[in-house]
Amino acid sequence: MNRLREHIRRNLIGSILVTYVQFTPLSSLSLSSNMASTASDVTQVQSNKTTRFTSVKALTESPELTSLPPSYTYTTNPDDEIVEDPHEDDPIPIIDYSLLVTGTRDQRAKALRDLDQACEDWGFFILINHSLSKGIMENMIDNVFAFFNLREEEKQEYAGKDVMDPIRYGTSSNVSMDKVLFWRDFLKIVVHPEFHSPHKPLGFREASAEYCRRTWKVGKELLKGISENLGLEGNYMENAMNLDSGFQMIAANLYPPCPQPELAMGIPPHSDHGLLNLLMQNGVSGLQVLHNGKWINVTSTADCFLVFVSDHLEVVSNGKYKSVLHRAVVSNKATRMSLAIVIAPSLETVVEPAKELLDNESNPAAYVGMKHRDYMQLQRSNRLNGKSVLDKVKI
Ligand SMILES: O=C(O)CCC(=O)C(=O)O
Ligand SMILES: [Fe+2]
Image (tube, rainbow, N blue to C red; front, side, top):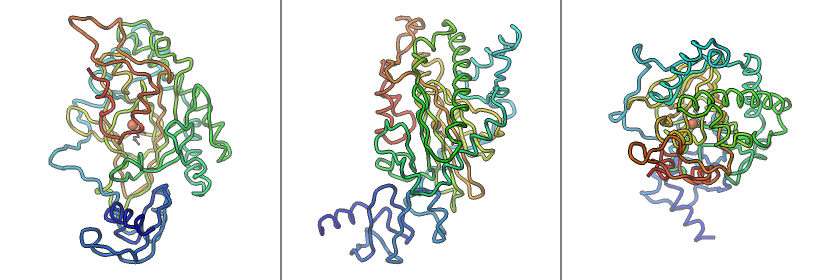
């Protein structure tokens, strides 16, 4: 017991037991302050009270929270990075979905050109007129909020153990790997090829089934346009990525108000696995995308989709389209919720550059093939860190 305590003291006390509000994500470590401390561990243990939290939401609801617990302190180097609003002469691209699917020939051709440029210049765009009604969007947002508002014990039923669990509720990103905790709770649900849903709150299943069915269709239409833009058959992605058994996942993120937002991070810079990611948010901003070396603040209304080019589209296009690095910062004003829909190849698909695009001389393969399932495992077993997973398949 003494040895175990010593081990815990050495490894953990310096980083998390500094103030008397202590966050112990998902594990059941219980530390008390009667353990001896040294100057290098902790300068002052303020109380012998320890409280366990399993989510940022629960932490923010604690009356003891007055400042950011040190385990959440995320350091960026302000000299190294520029954060800006979009410039008038280089605005975030806007794609009108209705023109892609029901526009005249000329309108569709123009929309396709815009889509091609958006994927190439930004790896990101705002999608408007996307065919999902305001009612469907709002109903989904309400149900996701209702899930996060369940009691912690109810949500803990879905606390994921394995990265491939079909429903996973959690906090931060990967608490066993994260050096710093992130100011974010999440719920991830696999919804295709097999549909899963938490059984609470009432109505979640129906709202999510409808939302997922419709966003899948939007994703497939965009991929059709993207295939054509790459000079491939319109149904290339559908066939080569085996979208009949394609992988679709909901990733809902909750960012409660943070007492010291400038010191914390909601989700660190990363790119997503899959082909495309369709994100909506509750009208509260926080997303930043990296464009020409600068972090650009993305503001949008709740009725559009923010669409990301993801890692597998970078691979299939052999690097013509690059997956976009993005992150979410937090605020002290309002709770932000974002809901991402990952549109991805089937788990058994080996994703590699489209052979039709390759040429040994002028365009050799720049990535090795990897099964989507293995890519996901790799991503989930590493710290969320820029494009480090994609780098592993780069030649
Ligand atoms: O909350 C956001 O805006 C970003 C979320 C995100 O990047 C993700 O879920 O992969
Ligand atoms: Fe993301």
